[in-house]
Length: 306
Ligand code: DGT
Ligand code: MG
Ligand code: MG
Ligand code: MG
Ligand code: MG
Image (cartoon, rainbow, N blue to C red):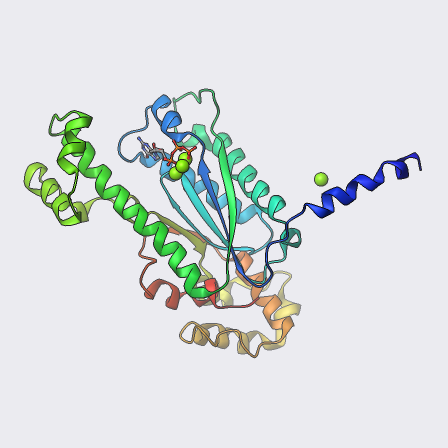
């Protein structure tokens, strides 16, 4: 009762809450805060520390599991950053920007610290403890989303090629950082491949794919529908019952017809697909996401409305 006197302040909150534009693809990108310092403090191997990348991937997987059902359809990570793609129709937290971004950042950071000992055994986590910033951007079309992820993966490639050559010149060539920088100034990709190969016998294309391509994390829905016959039957049976055979047929045929995949399905059917998708195994791959093939083979990531 006395509270009513104060309650008007909540209107201020309402007036400053941003709801992300409906019917757009939301990308939330998180990035390690001052990781130049953090990676030095913890003596990360240069240019890539596989322990750190695996830890980042475990945190991204945790975010995918912990955040509302199948809200996140794909995540892409490189260096100290991860981008999370939310489904276009996602209405989690009423699409409140602050709530979405802060929740993703917080789940990710909590796992980074909790899982640290598993990935860096024997390395004590020093202060300042790792933290991440986050931002959300809405993309109105599928080509925009594709270009966003192509941009991040191209960035991964450019940085990694540069860093691989830079650290080869220092670690194997005995150059100082300044000399390495001067050697690489004005070089194009081909020159860097050549320096690596002729001077250090390093074939860049044989470097680990996790370094060259980054990490793609997504629900492998295809695997679920392939296994559907074996997996169903505990509790879900009544719900799936009649249409299950029909749906399985649709699910597999839709993988070859990406754009039409979910069109013409009833809301109930779409909800069932969403449930199945949420249960699908989360996989981590280091594959090309710039070309069409990845997306065309996995229409549930971008093209299905659930
Ligand atoms: P920020 O994001 O503005 O707070 O500042 P930083 O320092 O995090 O800068 P950013 O995000 O542009 O660059 C990432 C830094 O993290 C960069 O200095 C390289 C470092 N880093 C990321 N992954 C690795 C790794 O695997 N090994 C090593 N040695 N360093 C890494
Ligand atoms: Mg930065
Ligand atoms: Mg950073
Ligand atoms: Mg970064
Ligand atoms: Mg609360």
